[in-house]
Length: 394
View (cartoon, helix red, strand yellow):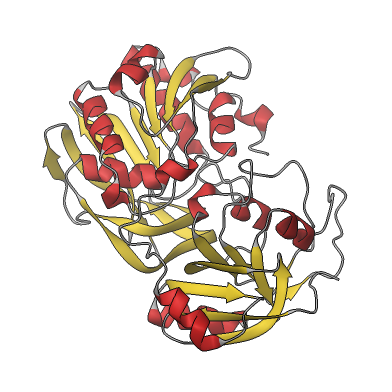
């Protein structure tokens, strides 16, 4: 069976309660309730450090069909605080499956719940917004669990990067000929991200979130990269200062997700918490420079507050909102130009997209071209490096 016979309850901070069965480990857990709209890719979602201290609700009704394998993890562990599904698969069916999903959840101590109306829960979160939640399969008294939910930490104001960043620097070698050196600030990076860069001839030096400008320079970097990560971007001072220094030194820069928010703050913009965020692998984003629409992978509950209708002058150059979400006009990217050339850019979504889609993987080529131009190379020789061979596959 994909779930045991223990009863479990889920209680939201506004008092809404759902009753179901335990799924995964027996116990109690708390976090921010968010929903993910991906029809596939649950293993990549669960192992994404950006979901630290969040309880993920799967909107797809049937979860666990492909089991759990040992190849698709995006980090060394499951990071979600809890997992909520409607109908868990009774038996996984995939040639790479090593064990059922619930067995892996139990082994890693992840408390979950199944057999609840996830559609009703998702609609509630869409109407009321993401909120704190508790799941328990050891205490099914709603009032006592609600009190503990309301006493748990909120996501607004949470500084979580220190829990997920690497302890020490390490290097991911380039695939084939080395063309560039990239210093990557690990704010909760996923494994597929440096892989996308190494496929394009980039040697990636992974640095902790506390890295200084001296640490970046010591790598001999041609460019600086800021990764995805969890928590409230308004709490991050050190990475923002590092970003400002890199911009002042005119180092090519690329950021994704939390890296986009850090870039935005370094440019003087604020950030704010979205009502329920964007999470899933089916979000339409418009590239305003090309009018190209990409279907993209998202996981963010905060966004950059930048004007859509006009460019902004900063000490580092002119900034434009380069990408917007077609669902709600949320800022999904920024571009910094100086002397007619792009010097830095960022996107709010995940172009590495291990679980797909791969529409936005060309942004890694854009990063390569930007570094080549800064170095005085011919960008044409770097565009689409190894893309046909890599196939943008895992």
